[in-house]
Length: 583
Image 1 (cartoon, one colour):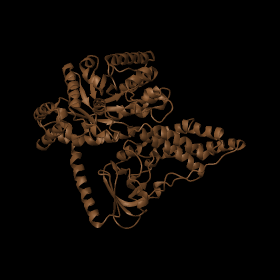
Image 2 (image 1 turned 30 degrees about the vertical axis):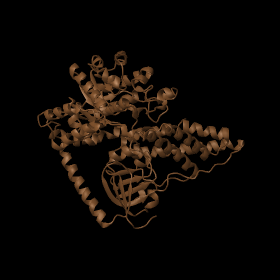
Image 3 (image 1 turned 30 degrees about the horizontal axis):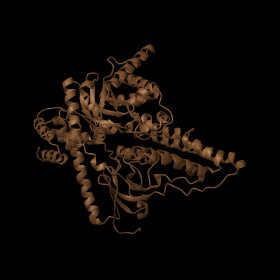
Image 4 (image 1 turned 90 degrees about the vertical axis):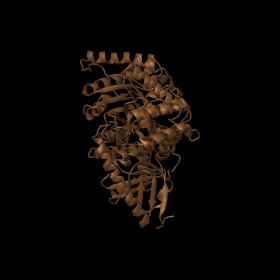
C-alpha cells in the first residue's frame, strides 16, 4: 500500500493546528507474547524473572521522571510517573501475574499479558471514554514489563528527524513525555481517545494530534512527507504541490486568527452595552495551568480533583492533596479557584475508593459525587482539610457535585466546620471567613429545588453536560442514542433558566461550566438568560470573549426570551443561529 501517490485519511483531531514534515513511523507497540507451561520447580525462578522485569520498569520510569524534571511539563509528568510507579508496586497487575505463575504455571510474559487483558476487558465492559483513557495507562505499564521480559525495548523518539511527524499505533503517556515541541511537529495514531493523557499533553504542548486512524502505520514510510491537520482530523501522506499550497495558506490563515485572538488575552470580556462577564477555565490536570494563564482566564471556574485519586490503589493523604492544591492556588496568583470535591463513581472509577462498592459505584445513578464523599467520611474530611489549608494561600471556593437535596449541603457544611476546628486544634492556620460552599446544578432535582438549595448554598455552578444527560436520559457515548443529546432541548434550557432565576433571587453567584459555555454560538443565549460567569476549556476563552464583545446584552435578552417560548429544538437552533449571524 505504500507508494508516492497522495493518500488522505480521516481521524479524530484532538489537538488543533497544522504541521507538515517527514514521517517517523514508530514500530508496533505490541509483541507476539509466547506462552508455555512452567513446571513447579521452575516457578520460583520464573517469579524472580518477573520481579526483575518489574524492577527494570521502575528504573525506566524513574529515568523518564528525571528527564521530565528538565522540561516544562514537570508537574503533570511527576503525577503521571508516580502513578506508574504505584502500578509497579503490589498492584492488581503485578499480583495477578505472580498468581498465574505460581498457580497456573504460566511463563512470566504470558502471565502479565493474561492479567493485563483481564483488566482491560473489565474496563472496556463499562464502554466509557474516560475509562478507556485509564486503559491506556494500564496497557502502557503492562507492555513495558512484557518488553523487558522479552528484551525488546521501544526505540525513543530522539532518533526522529527534526520537525518529524510521529506515526504510531498508539502513544502512551510516557511516549508523549518524549514529544519535544522543538523537534516534533505533530503526531497521528491508530488508537487513543480525546480524554487520554496523550491528547491532554499534546494540547498543552501545542502539538497537532490526530487519533483513530487504523492501518495508518502500514500506509506510510519513515521519511515520507505528511500533513497533520489536528483541527479537522485529517492526515495527508505524500501531498501534491497543490495540496501543500492549500495547507500552507491554511497555516497562514490560522496564524492570523491566533494573532487576532491573542489580543483578547488582555482585554476585558465586556459587551457593547458595558456588561462585564467573567470567563474562567476548567482544569482537569495541573499541566493545563500554563494554558489557563496564556488565554487570560479570570480564574479557575472548575478544578476537577479526580486527578489526585486516579491510577492508584490507595487514596491520597491530606498532605499530598494540600501540596497539589496549594501549587495550583499559588500559580493563579490571587485569581479565584473553584475546587470541586471528589466526583468519582459512575463512569469515573478510583480503585482505592470503589474497590469494595461494586455495582453501587459503577452506575451513573448510583454512589457518585457527594453521595460517595458522605459515605467515605474519612476521605471527605481529608479533602476538606486539605482545601482549607490551600485556601490560606489564595481565594478558593468549594463546589459539591451531584447534589440533589438540602441535607447533603448541610452535612457537608458541618464536615467543613469540623475540618476547620481540627486545624485550629493542630494550631494550623484557617482561612477567615471559610471558603464559600457551592452546589453543582447537574441533575434535574437540583435545578427544580434551586430555590431551596440557594438558602443553604453560597453559589451555584451549572454542569450542563450532566444536566443534559440526566434530563434527557441520554448517554452521549452510546452511539445508538447519542443523537438525542441536545443541550438546546427546551427541557434543558428551562432547567438552566429556573436555576439561574433562583440564584438571582437569592443574590448568590451562578456560573455555567459545561461544554456549551466554551462555544461562542451559545454565549448570547446564556447571557440572555442572566448568566454572567462562564467556565470552559482554556483554549476557547478568546473565542467566547470575542463573541461577547460583539453583542448587546439587551438584544441577547430579547432573543433568549423568544427562544424560551419555543418547544422545538430545531426552531431554537435556528433562532440562535440567526441571532449570531445578525448581532
